[in-house]
Amino acid sequence: MKSQSRTVLSSGLLAGTLDILAAILIYAVVLHKTTAVKILQSIASGIFKQEAYVGGSQMALYGLLLHYFIAFSFAFFFFKIYPYFPFLQKNFVVSGILYGIFVWIVMNLIVLPITFPKLPSKQFDFPLLLSILILIFCIGIPIAFITKKHYTYR
Image: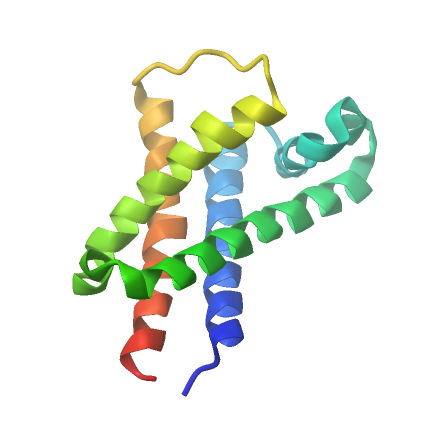
């Protein structure tokens, strides 16, 4: 029997790793819009503001740690709500898609506007769709899959 903490840790670690790798691969390697360090510094800027961009690799590390904290938080939340919502238990792919969309909504319509009051307006275009797809496939589905396994085999 898997422990609750092991399930949350493994789903958060997997989701956090897939998400940050997708961001780096797509935005730094494929599209050449930024660098891996700048992505991580941007995450750190949620706490350290502009100082994050001049802090070098130390701020990148803080950004990575913050990124994993957020991933673990979403994994913990899903793990806790899972038993109370039967529709989440029917199909992990569907629940993962729904949870990925939920994560996008929370991050882009609540967390980021509070953290960064002057964000550009969002338009339904390819970058927006890509950001939703990343969260569905890298956060939602992996968390839903690992959580379902825990509750199925306990």
